[in-house]
Image 1: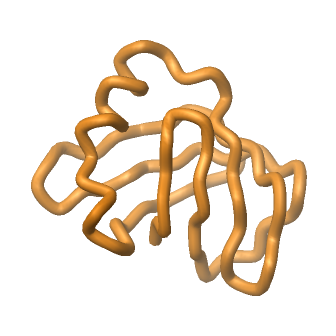
Image 2 (image 1 turned 120 degrees about the vertical axis):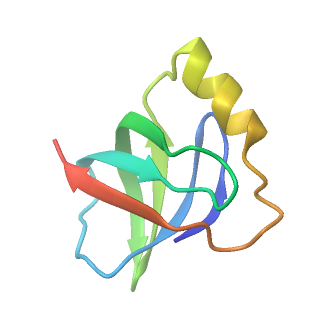
Length: 83
């Protein structure tokens, strides 16, 4: 789940163990829009089930799509996998 996510990074909550430095691919699933694939994020900090990620220089399409996601709705579901 997302707590927040911007074009540069954000805070995520998950059930899988991640480590600082891991590279992940994130599939964001907003409730009213199509899914958004973020090809690369890097885990920058971890605390319990929460972890911070930094986005790898998003392309213009991804940046525009992230701007359209209603992050005022808490906890948007997501899926992630390691590179």
